[in-house]
Length: 248
Ligand SMILES: NC(=O)CC[C@H](N)C(=O)O
Image (cartoon, rainbow, N blue to C red; front, side, top):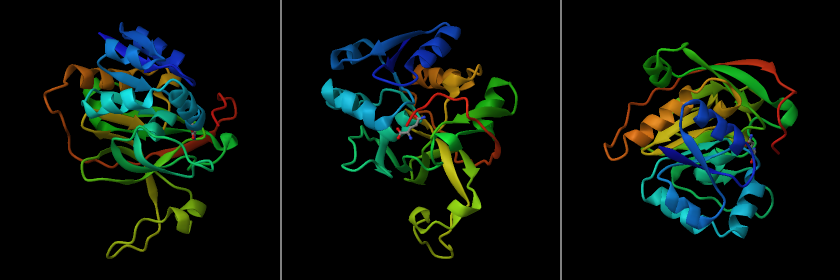
């Protein structure tokens, strides 16, 4: 099996290395025609505005959108999640082009600046239990986005509580629904929608390959219409990290 890794910018080398640890070849994708040689794709973390400019320069957007539309498995991590979202907020002026396909609204820098990068221990039973490893995942958030709203077909795999100053921010409030105060207690950080997987954090920067294994299983199961029930889980904030790569 070979998995494409969009290699314009960001942590594509780390994804290729994680795949290699699982005995899978990662194929670096920089041009539209190279997408024809793979049946699945990882879009790494990095800087989504820069990545979008490079993708535009290489005329990759039409081919990437077609890839998603064809139902081929695609996993976006961090900036890759932003790329896959149907809608992004908190973008630089002028916005940026997105691939879209993932029915959600993502806030590009929800957790703040680089200095506010952090790690959290995330329980994700759907994935952890199946792999028989530890019950939680060490999730590395670097200038990370968060998912604010999801459509009906999106399965939430993980969410985390938000700090109290963000919980009352009117710009981040939940769309008002009956019985809701509109304040936000948690945000979503990992989702699955059909053959799309998206994480706001960076599994490729840890030694834990369970997220990569999960994606490879999705690749194996293509065509079988795999889906699972919604399960929202919480995670605790851990110490801040200042030694992480700078992805702005
Ligand atoms: N670690 C990351 O990929 C950061 C993504 C960054 N927030 C962006 O807008 O692109």
